[in-house]
Amino acid sequence: MTVLARAHHNPADDAYQAVVAAAHQKLHDAVVDTRFVRSAVSESWRRCLKLHHTPERVTAPTTISTDILDNHRKTHPVTEVLPLVETLLAPAHEVGLITAISNTDGHLLWVDGAHPMRAQAETIGFAPGADWSEESMGTSAPGAALSTGAPVQVAGAEHFSHAVHGFYCSAVPLRHPSGNIVGMLDLTGSEAAVTPLALAMLSNTAQVIEQYWASQTFPDAHHSAPVALPNTPLIEVATGRTPRVGQLRLSNRHAEILTILDWHRSGLSATQLAHELFGDLTPDELPARLTTVRAEMSRLRKLLLTRKLPISIDSQPYRLQTAVATDAHAAMRALHRGDLTTALQVAPADILPGSDAPGIVDIRQHFAVTLREAVLADATPDQLWSYLGRHQAANDVEAWMLALKILPSHSPRRAIVTATLQRLTN
Image (cartoon, rainbow, N blue to C red; front, top):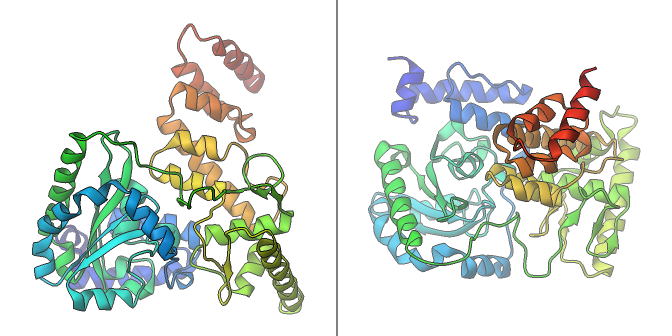
């Protein structure tokens, strides 16, 4: 039996873990070795490299405040079935594992189970209020399950962050009766967390919960992410208008900083932020750029404080410490959970189209590619038509050809599609 074959049977296998650890070292050079690493893991590594560039940037999760956590708990549909979850997953607690439930944004709402393992997990930030999405902590079972909508097991060195290599986890998505993902159910701890029995226990628990929900009547609980407290606005950077938060207009530089920090929720040093804003810098150029970064951060903090906006920025590293998000990030999370309609509505235009900051260019291109792939793979006629109105689709022959294929034969839009294709192909 090959190492990879053994991994599919037991991802905690020592020989497989050694191979994965070697492949993980190559991530420093953005090289994903798919020969000996399970596909679910290598695919997550690719997504995480686009988000974080290197595992060294992922050290601790972002967290939400106690007030926001309490708000999520009160409104989440899992609240009414917690006793059921505790009963069904009690056997896992008895063997030293912990269980966690998150919302669609990756925020852990509840963490329960064996106290020794809970204490150990808290050292890596695996605790209520922490964000364990791929955007925050890279590859983990909770993050990958939310990104793919499928059950996932992640063992030891398969985690993107070095800090998590001593843990093992399995996770399954929880779905509302409408089919939308509303959260994630997780087992974390020792190697026992990645056995077939662990995954079966989670899947059975999720099935019981979803069957119960199907017998009830309650609103669809999926949200644009991250969910903020009532009346908290998004940071608008993808509407085609001047960037703003609520009624406050932002300078292009401040919008760039907020967008980059929102995309890199684990935080950036001043040097890393300078590279995101200005690109590769020589040793002679760096000091002046660092001065610019620190001055802009000071102005931005003062502006947010003066306007009493619910946005705070930590230092060392610079990190958004808030539930407020950019519309761009909210749209990307919507795409990750398969909600194309929300993505198109929340971010109807390119992300900061006037910016040439390297970090923004990367984000803009990543979102554009992800959105296009989602549209070509699964768009309804109305979703496709909304996409075709975007600047990036103006000369996209494949997208216009898809419109000709899926639009109803009697649709008046077909004339526009035909004329556009004639222009593009002649």
